[in-house]
Length: 247
Image 1 (cartoon, helix red, strand yellow):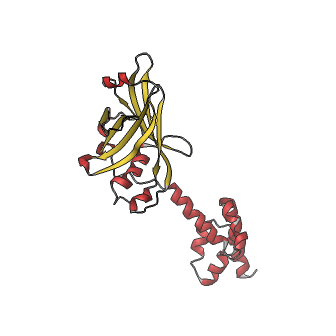
Image 2: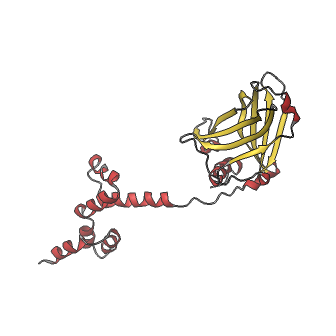
Image 3: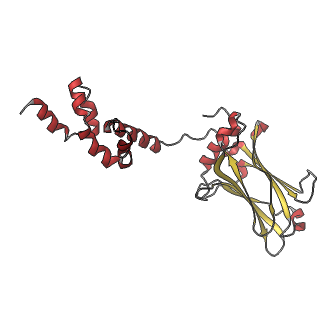
């Protein structure tokens, strides 16, 4: 049996990593180890969707498609870096205005440092702020239209990001306010605002019997699956605006 035939038989029993190492021996081995008939079954079994790309461009070798697939899979498995921004660095400010009042003075202002917020047991970016001590809410009718402004301030007033600006809605037992947030790329000076698919969500919760606000629930959720994002993911999003140099 000729040496090249032996080499061909051995190649079919090698895993992708061994094939890549063996292809570095010499030029003839590189040609043998890069053959499509070796890499096609490997690529098809590991990345079937990439294998179909061969139809669109027959000149692309299966070995190359496999390498692309491995690189993409590795990137997906990478753990994102911890956010540089901490919840303790933030201050939540919420202003509530009567909709029919043209005055810029809010009838209720809430200020809550991030280090005073109670973390959700599931680790999501959603917090309840107790406002029972605000007697002014007793005058708010269940169906009265209000405007809400919600800002996240970086400690020391080193930066501010508007989560919600004059968002209109109604108070009451189920007073919901939502506003889609911009893409992080918009902080780079572009005049075009691109939606991120992320929504700032705020709810005014009332006690049924006393017509008094019980709490304000705030959070950031994904508009795609309507699930709240994790604290770390929300902080990574906010740091693009509050820490413009963050990578």
